[in-house]
Image (tube, rainbow, N blue to C red):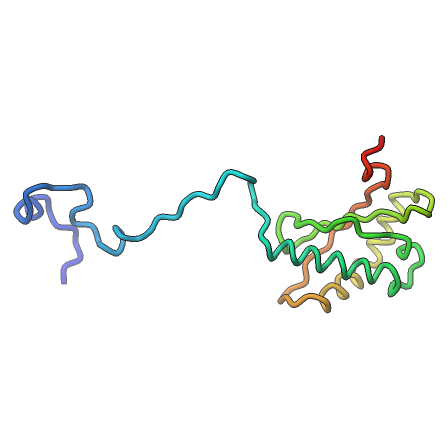
Length: 149
């Protein structure tokens, strides 16, 4: 079976009108073309990614509230978890409790960096995924969170 494209002379002998799609493989011609995604966001967040972020936020709130041995980390609360840039790495926004005085962000970063492995292990046991996502923590001051200067 010859898979070469038929010549123009052969096509003209077979039909009266020659069209641009004559001689094309029907599998390629009838294949549906993918439509471009709607222009909402550069990278839309999928529903399953949002579910993962919610599950990670719940797990980290439980671990930080009572299971953590570091008293400094027990005063922190998880504000939000977002994909950064996808579900393989998650941005965890934390803040201090309203009753505590405003702590130093460098101290918070140091404590979170020291506990990052344990927190990631706790997240890995709570979620059903092949690989646990990398956690990146960021401190958000409570007055910035409420929109106050």
